Length: 514
Image (cartoon, rainbow, N blue to C red; front, side, top):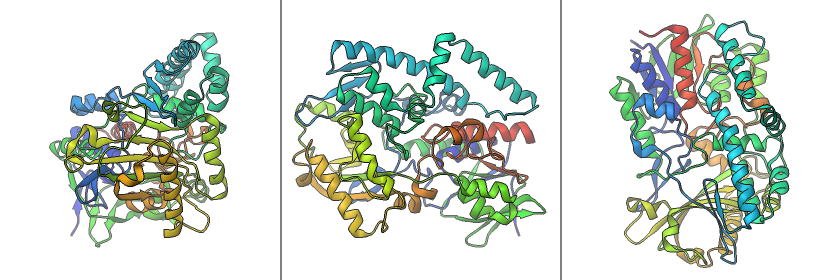
C-alpha cells in the first residue's frame, strides 16, 4: 500500500522547506522526507556539550533573499543585522568594518574602501537579481530563456560602458590582485580576502575569488546576524510555514532510492522499506548523491553521469565549537564588542599560506578563522555566566592525507588553539568542552558530498548556466519528473532560499499549479 503525493521533496534543508512551502501554497500535496531527527540540514541548532548549544554548521545569516522572506511572510527578525566585522590584531590594534566604513586604517584606505564597497555592492546587486531567476540556457529558443538573456545584456549595459568593462574584467579575477592594488593596510587586505574564500577550496590568488566575494555580498551587502535560538530557528520557522501551507514533513526517514520506472520518476523508497508515490521528485541532496546514489548511474545517460561524477565538491572548512567558562581576554576589545563578528586573517599572504598545505592534503598549521560568540547575544545557548564560541576554520581538506584520524584531528586542534592563543591568551584555560567538525564529519552528519557548503565549488565553470553541470542547469535532471533544489544548483550555497524558490517556480511553470 503506497501513499501518493503531487510532489515529494527529499531532504528538509532550508531550500527543501522553501520549495515545499511554495508548492503547497500553489495547491500541491507535498511530502518532505528528512534523514535526520530535525529539519534544517546544515542550518540547525543543537547541543554539543551539556548545557551548551550552537548553530552546528551554518552559523551566520546574511543571504536570506527578500523574495523568500516576502512570499513566505517570514518574521522580520530574520532580516540581517549590521554586525561589525573585527579583524583581530595580536597587538590589540584591531580593524573594524561596518558597511562602507572601516576604522583603524589610513584616511586614504578609508576613502578607497568606500569606493570599493560601492562598486562591489553594485556588481553584487546585478548578480543578486539573477540569483532569483531560473538560469537561461545557451543556444536556447525558449522565449523565457531568451528574455532573461536579453535582460542580462541590458542590465550590464545599464552599468555604463566603463563599469560594464570593469565588471567583465573583475568577475574571473583573484581577490589578491584587487586588494593589493587598492589598499595599504594588511588587516584590511586579509579581512576582504577571507570573505572571498570562506567555505571554498580557493585561496586569494585563485581565479574566481572576486566572483565568490560578490556572491557573499549578493545576500544583503555583507550584513550579518546571529538569529535568536541559532540558525535552527530559521529552519524551524520555514518548517512552520510549510506545515501551515499543508506540507507533510517526516523526520528520521532516510530515502534509499528514487524509483525510476520506464525512464521517469514514480516515487521514492525509504531505508525502512516504505514506498511513497509521486511523478514529481525534488532532491534537496547534492547533485552527486542524487544522481549517483538515489537514482543510480544506470538510469542516467552515460555522458551526463560522467559530468556529475566530475563535479568538484571537496570541502576545506571545519567548524569549531567551544564551551567556555567565561569570555576570553582579547586586548583592545570592549566587552560589548563580543556581540560582533571576528576574523583572524592578518593579511592576504597569510590566508594564501594557510591554503598552501591543503593543496597537498594537509591541514593548515596556522589557520584562518571566522568567529562569533553567539551566547553573548542569546543567553539560552549556554549556562548562566558561561559562553559558546562558534568558528569556521580553514583550511581543513576533506581528503586529508592519511585520513581524519583521532591523531589528525588532535593535531589540527592544537594548531587551532595555538593560533587562537595569539589573540586570546587565556582561551585554552577557558575551554570546558569542544567539538571539531572536519569536512568528513560535515559530510557524515549533514549528508553533503565532500562536506562542501555549496555542494559544488563556486567557480565560473560551475556557475549560473552550467551549475551544477550541463544537462542539469535549470533544476530539472534529464530524467523525467526529477528536480534538484539544493545548494548544488543555481545560485549556490548559503542560507538564502533562492535555489528552493527558483526550483518551485520552475516546477509550477512546467507542471502547472493545482
